[in-house]
Image (tube, rainbow, N blue to C red; front, side, top):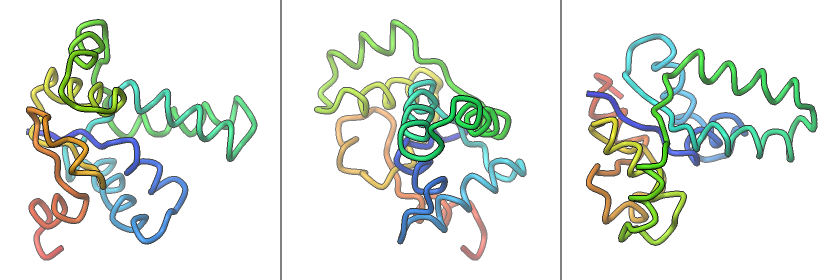
Length: 141
């Protein structure tokens, strides 16, 4: 069963944010190679586009290329009305995190991969750090 990658992990990989970049890049690489079954949420895609455009590229076409590459590498789980409504009534304090948790639950995924495990304490889908996920699924990691 697959796992959903939280927005912060994607941004760690793209922005090479230390000390988390290496593990985040390993996750994306292994998923792109078909070694791990990882997913993005639709809300992560919109967040990544916005942040990349505003702080990095300042160019719509280049920002779209980055998002296109992500979506070609990892499947995207839907974030629709149901996920948004459930998130609005979630015990998870941050709405964006609640949407991610609901997307993972709707897609019946096994984990949410995030640096902020405590933010998902009330999620039905357990949260796990990138390091712990890699150690669990990649022999010798």
